Amino acid sequence: MSFIAVDIGATKIRVASGNRKGIHEKRVEATDRENGPRGVVTQIITMIRRLEESPRAIGVGSIGPLDLERGEIKNTPNYPFNWMPVAEPLRGEFGVPVRIANDCTAGVLGEHVYGAGRSVQNLFYVTFSTGIGGGAMVDGHLLVGKDGNAVEVGHLTIDPHSEMICGCGCPGHWEAYCGGMNIPRFARSLLRRGEWRGSFLDELCGGDTGALTTEKLFDAAKRGDEAALRVVNEIGMVNAVGLADIVNAYDPELVTIGGGVALNNPELILKPIQRHADNHVINRMPKIMITPLGEDVILYGALALALKAE
Ligand SMILES: [Zn+2]
Image: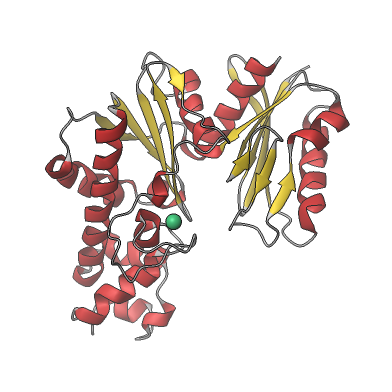
């Protein structure tokens, strides 16, 4: 009998079996977004059954916001429906303990138990994905909050007068500039001012800024395109401010970075942060690195939650 870890994402569901030593087997599927909350729950149950008919306990790292007491996802901007029960249907189906955490809270726990933060008591995990999220361990304690949403750093305000409106409706949040979903819009606002005609990025987009994507921007930057590198540096400046806010607020020894945007572009995300964060920090700078657990960091955290749940 194994423990089961579940990572509920906006676009992907990951499920793994494992134990204290780590993950045994993993399955990844595109999230069923077409059939309401019940569709996603059924998908998770089916994926678990394919790995383990009778799990010992289940840990879940999930997109938020969460209602931790009820074990539910609530008011999420990431799904076409805004509410989904998680803990109760899994408990009902398998009759075992289920523990749930915000995905990045699970991420920092995964880093602490299985990753780069094993002996570290003050640790922070940031994800650069479609959005930006964080998880904090302070003095060995996982920060959770009254509803499970203690560390929503993606919604730290960079500029209250900004025209960049966040998915949550507020102006100038960090994620409004640097979340994977919003990077193209931020890039367009910069390129309108700058000269980018004739650049490789211009060519990739067929001369249409409307065709600009996060992937194209970083691909062009990797090829050394100056227009793209200018935008990537601006993104890096904003990320450095966000990171500095984290260092000033949580005083971590180590910050690990994950999420698709960072994992696909480690140098282009990490270097500007390392270069500029110092300018905004009053606390002693921590070590900042890409998570060695890659795209499984939340899954490892969910596994650690399952081990605690039993
Ligand atoms: Zn926001």
